[in-house]
Length: 351
Image 1 (spheres, rainbow, N blue to C red):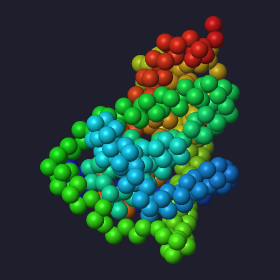
Image 2: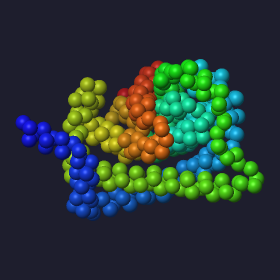
Image 3: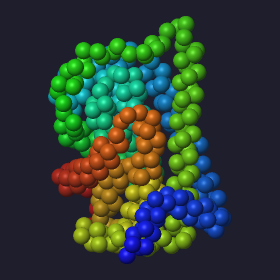
Image 4: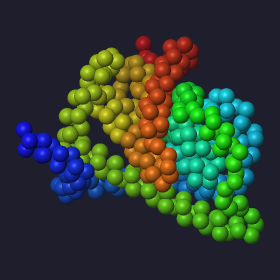
């Protein structure tokens, strides 16, 4: 018994080493399919992610060195405080997170914390609901390209935003310490933030570009990594084995068993998962749309690691983000279900 306990302890201590050792072995063993998957990931990153996100990252880095957050604070404080228990400056993260997509909302929340604009608790609340998928991805890629309908994309965008806002309202109670916030507000903006001027514009722009490139490279690395991981799991048949776990869940929700594979892949990485879900031919296409709404809200483990890499550079906890994304996925799916069953124009089921 004692030997078994020692073995279990050593295994637990070395689990990360064993996992990455297995990953290296699989890279060699499944090299052919892995190279193809890595190329696909790089293609997705170069053709879609860089053009859509890099300009946003540069603009956000520069804007964070201006008085824009202070302006947003004055304009939206009366909305943000009662709804989300966050000062008005947090509206910048919410708005940019909705307009641009993953992981912009999380990056702004971390910047607000680093610049001492919002409290730790406020920024953790922001993490729970501001890191969202962008309208271009939801309407263009998912709605038009995958489902062949801009109306489906619009429906998913509306329920995605509603799910985000509902999650934010629930998280208004996260670590609600009024005394701490009141004490903090007296010293707000007493920070070392370098405000951009004509004289230092070139310097700040250069720094913003370098920081943005670093972030975009990190995102590219995660996209390639998870493309290869999914390829290994698929080629080795592990996906089929793990997907068996999702079959009881599918039966509980009265879903066809075909969704078990795509649901697992979607939890790992949303683009591949949603692509598979959209390709499942059913007369009740509303099922595909509702599951897609959940995955969009949840974001996937790939996005989670992207956010973790950004958050790890601050004192913020990743816990509110994880809980928030689960709630966001559930609320988005519920709102999608209600709208489809309430408004006939959004009922795409074939009779």
